[in-house]
Image 1: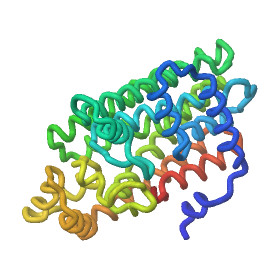
Image 2: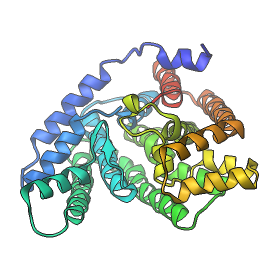
Image 3: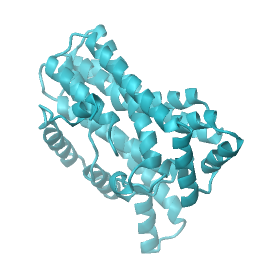
Length: 354
């Protein structure tokens, strides 16, 4: 077992975070008016269907690492991050035509199924997509509600609003670059890493840490070190996700094997493989990006990704990113227990199976 794996599986000293966060989430949801009951019910169901709470957890540790302080409103503010994640997931599933999410039909599929079952007029697919977009929009609206009604002091809310605004914009910019990558048939590793930095790293790790530190009122040196740590861990998180998206066990991921291949995603894993491929193997790889993708083609591509050394290269890059991230932590005067927890979370985020 590697040191990183050992750290990732070590028992946390603050294992009660998840329970405390879920209480804050339930209390927030209980306060929401049922103006749009069908949309709200689906959003509540998605929030209760699982999820790793990665973003609020990193924000909490950013808050602790920078000194913590008064806890009033902090957990409630972090509910905003989980709602933002729900917005991203629901919209992403529509754009990628993903049929499953967290082991259940994705939101647009559920609404389409209801349309067919009730024999409503019009296109079931269009209704499902449209309703899912509204669920995502509702999640984004509630995310802002969670932030501004959390009970933070005016000064803390003003500080938190800077990373909160940046996070939302960066998430959308990254998603757009992802769409462009598919449309333009991008094959560059540089572009794939840029998408990873914006679409995943910024709003999964870097900005949540920034948000937590901003609530505390951390100085710029602390914020800079936490953000550097977050960028590297966040990109490593996405690279691990790229591997899981191709090789992941459906019983663990809740998605079909080779899901990223079936969606034609331009990942760093695929970009590396294409730079190493011969004409024949490159043709097989590109065929998987343009579809249709059969189970046999998934098997062929998986074999090629290993044979060409792309999998090993991604694993090596993950290790380098995590090592750089840990070095960034050493340059800041952070609270020791929170630093230990950030190290554990870095391992957990980058050695996971789903």
